[in-house]
Amino acid sequence: MLSCMHMLMYTLENMHNNSPSHVKCWWWWWRVVLIHWFLVSGLQAQQAYLNNDQLDCDNNSNNTKGFVCNGPRKSCLSYLTFRSAPPSYDSPPSIAYLLNSNPSDIATINQISDVNKIPKDTVLIVPVNCSCSGHFYQYNASYTLKYDFENYFTLANNTYQGLTTCQALKAHNPYYYRNLSVGMDLLVPLMCACPTANQTAAGFNYLLTYLVTWGDYISSIADTFGVDDIQSIFDANSLSSDLIFPFTPILVPLKNPPTRIQTTLSPPTAPPPPKSPVIPNGGGADSSKKWVYVGVGIGAALLVLLMPSGIIFCLLRRRLQSRQDKPVPGAGGGTKKPSYSMENNISLSVSSGGIRHAVESLTVYKYEELQKAAGFFGEANRIKGCVYRGLIKGDDAAIKMMKGDVSEEINILKLINHSNVIRLSGFCVHKGNTYLVYEYAENGSLSDWLHGDGRIGSTLGWKQRVQIACDVANALNYLHNFTNPPCIHKNLKSSNILLDGNMRGKVANFGLARRLENEEEGGGRLQLTRHVVGTQGYIAPEYMENGLITPELDAFAFGVVILELLTGKEAVPSQNKGGRGVVCVSKRGA
Image (cartoon, rainbow, N blue to C red; front, top):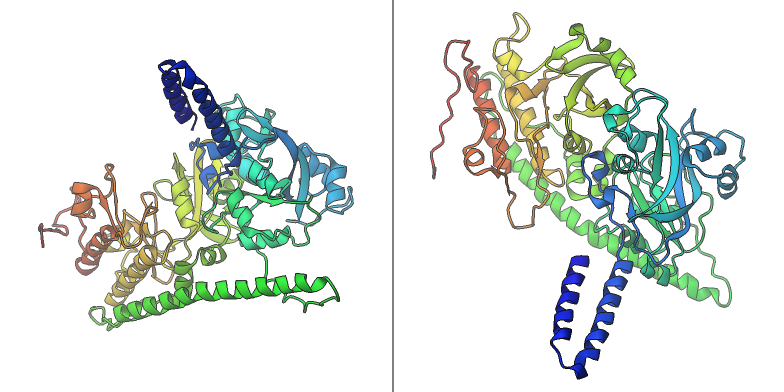
């Protein structure tokens, strides 16, 4: 915007210098109008929602640094929220120490004692003096590193629950993220904001930074803080839909200072039925009529929203039934139909709210906990490569150590809930490495069973092979048609299909997966890339030659897996093994 203003000012300056003296005054008038217009438009701009960008510490976009200074006031009274976390932060003094606030202010606004312990996950309101620092609003706290496993990412998302970001911590502290050590003092910029000119004109005097948790949605947040105009929350965060993510801050515009939050803890239950309104005599009749109109409007809106959902449900059900009626060939196996839950999948496909309610929260593990669970990552616990078997709270788990940016895989898997897709239960970040904790597949990979590395004396029967093929088909159908946006695995192969204790197939390894974020209705589902990656023998020709990413890419790889199941041969024969592998031929135009 500034460059555009400079260009226009430069043009006006040239016109001014080359114009007669009797019109030069007009150029000065236009310059003033332009400057005023740009300043006003800047003041009216809203904040940008994080949208999970904070999970990628290398993503240095502006919205990861904090809320932009775009209001007429450079400082103001603002409010944060924080959930009590025993045993470290479960009293006003301990929380005030962490957030650099006043214990008595926290106790007063939340109507609690300033000495008693607070139940776990109680949402507390914390008043702070928010001010501009450079280009961003913030309220500064300080923190001394106490443990070896602490870093910018865990500090932002675990200790401070999302009130800051690892990008903001990196920008405000001189220490390289790999050189952090116990005893270092860090500056912690907490995310707050002041109202814009538009918000002030609409009667909003305060902005509250609310931390989203599992099961939250915009309407429930509005109800919690008594916000009648739900659209004001959408506008304050530049949201076009109600899809929000845990560990992200949402700005809530308030006309009056907030009071004690009555609802606490995690996923909210359904609200109780409203009490019958009592219509007082006199002037209260208009107010009660207003709520009647609001109720009728909400009911009509819900009816309009549910009608397309019902239509989509019927169409998808008819489509899937037609697919399931086709028999799957297999010697001695008869006909097998896919065995996934239609009800769950439909809910995930038609509403983002369904996704949020279906997904279990990811656990943030401590490195010491995973190290102990995996036998200090010794050879005895190694499954293959950098994957180790661990025992966490009595349950078996697969712990995968990864380097580099794995935020995309986390973002995809945390929104997936399907019995034929390997489940991600949590993660840990330690010294630049990310440890992903998955459910444990007792029987290893399909590749091990098909190509000679399975259990001695055991082979897959035809019924098992047909069932595994159906399981993989279910998983792909779910990824392509019931996730929003659709997800392409891009690396489907027999070694990425794991078998659980019941020999049921589960698709794993989403490191190369891609979401079709820019899919437009009626425009086809495809993306192009110049970076072609995959496994030889499973790569579709159109992807290898043109970088075309579509659901058919996974369908091609699935066909290769089917051939492996039928023949027992590898897609590409290993050089140290005799025999021939599966040969896939593709003819142009066929």
